[in-house]
Image (cartoon, rainbow, N blue to C red; front, side, top):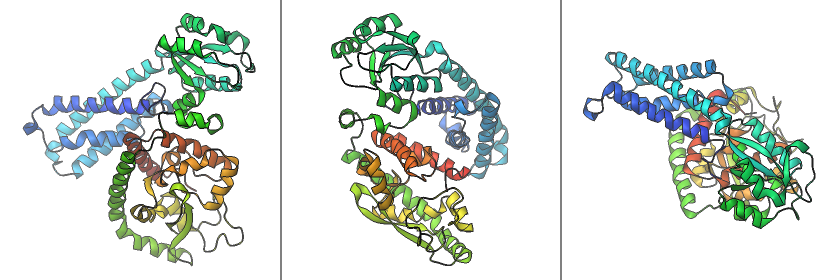
Length: 447
């Protein structure tokens, strides 16, 4: 469906970021002039800094904040921006009046246009009307997804089929599948979601073709679920859905681009962090007996086993009696210093060496242990598909869902992993990088 499709989980972030970028350019031109030779050095930092700090302060999560909370986060982003402007070259005290004026104008313009966008985006008048083919539990899920994301879509009603069970309200059933063309016209529907609990003997293809030629989009349930949640419902997809999907096409160009990104990010981060490795090593040795590094087998690209490198965060021989086991909240095996490095993700920094070796990617599905892969594969379809790309230090599942600690968690993370593979793009890679920075700063999701 695409990252910019209506209802997409990241669509709002993209639009808000783009709008703020234009707002920044506008106030920059207003305050400093449009001639490059008249622009002070500090003005070059303003737009990148204010966008980054607005993102890190979560200004672009409007559905989670009240107006007051959003304004406070916007102010916080401005303060961080001002602080960094004066740290960087060219940000001397004489520039303070101009910087304050620029910051104030941007604050007003940012919150003004975002307020208008939120109001119009959540208004029912702009919601896209759709009808659902199906009357069972799957069809009900569509209504739940719409209810959880107001302003994106409006449910006109359901279309009954000969075989699908009926669990929706009778008053919301608009007619039978043979009448779908007339129903689409009468309701002014812009989309039809096929959400059948019983798929056999339900559809009339020629009627749907007529609807499509009328300009009505035909969306299957897995694609609609993916669009609204940022994950793929593995229990509802089939091999034919995977084959016909526009995604899941990992070309040599994409692999080469990811390799370049891996080398650049891992080399840069390793160069910054390497001088601190001896300090971490000393703290580990002082905290508990045992080696500094922890070596463990994980499953990589195409199911190949490799050795992952981590700073040791658990007591030595912590699995000697229990064998391979999931990490849990407040895990007693974790040492005192281990708790800190797990919360801050410092324990994962040696994996940068795995990236440089080619075992891992900077971004990708989390590498699992062979024992867990064997367990999960027995109960979860399409788990092997996540091994189509290299595992990553961070990834879409890692930033969207807490640390996996059970088979159920692994299934949920698989839904995010498949979404990532299906929508692999430069923008999604960069989004994951920034989300990872935010998670590390706020110490979320680790165990």
